[in-house]
Amino acid sequence: MRDQIDTVRAAEAGPSGKKIDAMQVTETLAEGLKHEFQISVPASDLDAKADAKLVDLKDKVRLNGFRPGKVPVSHLKKVYGRSVMAETIDQTIRDTNTQIFTERGFRLATEPKITMPTEAKQVEDILSGKSDLTYTVSIEVVPAIALADFKSFTVEKPIVEVTDADVDEAIKRIADQNRPYAAKGEGAKEGVKAETGDRVTISFKGSIDGVPFDGGAGEGIQVVIGAGQFIPGFEEQLIGVAAGETRTLNVSFPKNYASEKLAGQAAEFETTATAIEAPQDTTIDDEFAKTLGLESLDKLKEAARERLAAEFAGATRRKVKRTLLDRLDEAHRFEAPPSLVEEEFNLMWNSIKAEMESGGKTFADEDTTEEAAKEEYQKIADRRVRLGLVLSEIGEKNKITVTDDEVSRAGREKEVWDYYRSNTNALAQLRAPIYEDKVVDFILELANVTEKKVTREDLYKDEDEEKSAA
Image (cartoon, rainbow, N blue to C red; front, top):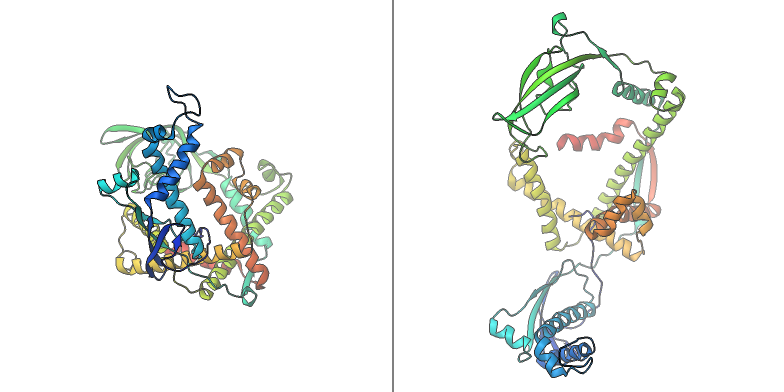
């Protein structure tokens, strides 16, 4: 589930057993955040509403043997009575539920659960207008949330300055990624063998149990040994190969490989090396900068500095946001709607189980048990739901919204934006992080934010630890 929980319409409260028009509404359960109501709608009310629909329908339908607008309602009832009554019942249930929730001030955590009569004769009697409609509606509501005083929050903002050494290191990485290669020799006759770091041009044909598979062949493919671009074990078996030499490489596709047909499968690749090249030293100067499309080395350094500053700012933002979310978690302790927590937990748990299965891992490998892991993820699910509701509450009370322009900027390219606009769920997923960031910015404007200079290592420490634990 999302980090931000979308809340439904807010409404006002009323006493149990209150009548809505001629309908009887009785609250049969009020247990924590769970409520249940039994509603009874007289058949006469349904019949009157259905007749009103039929009268409205009279001027719209065309039936053989009748002039436009002259079809008797009694005849319309014979032709359309059941379908119109079904529409009437559906609309009545929706209107009644909305009124019940509005009068009681309920904000729904989930969609209402409607329980209708199922016995065939009961259903027939209701549709034919002979019997009252009686149904139950079960709901789970969002609790009232008392927001903290955000002016009392103290948040430390880590600041890292970009040093000349950082810039030099970044440019060296760029140079390594763009280093030239030169032919190492003419082939096996001269004893030239591929080593780690060399670039080998290969052609290959893959097969599983002797049968070629789609996407398993390639011509003129360049592989840098040790770069980790190919599936595990492939590059290492090229060490020592000479130009013109053919080898059979035996590898296994990872269990989490993108193609389900290939995942976990053992394969053979008949591979021929056509060229072997050794990496060359790169001179970092104006000419090198020009190969990257920049005017000079100074311009390259300027671009590297700006890129690093943006990266550090992003890491700072993430750290400040985590700190703020921790503070919000501590300041807002309330019962989260159980169904939302269960939904969030199931999403996480299914993902974790799938990852472990694809990686061939067990809970013992992670130095834990399934029960302990479930308990931990239940806590995480509860925290996420509560924080989502808190962020939503802050946004609603302070009229924080996300404009279409903000969403379109996040979507960027026109085709991406068109996709999000035509896909309601995708659009909601795009809006949610923008909304969350705007709420976070709102809180930070009120909080006492202090800056503290830290090292690059300290800035990334938490993220590095999370990656190690993952």
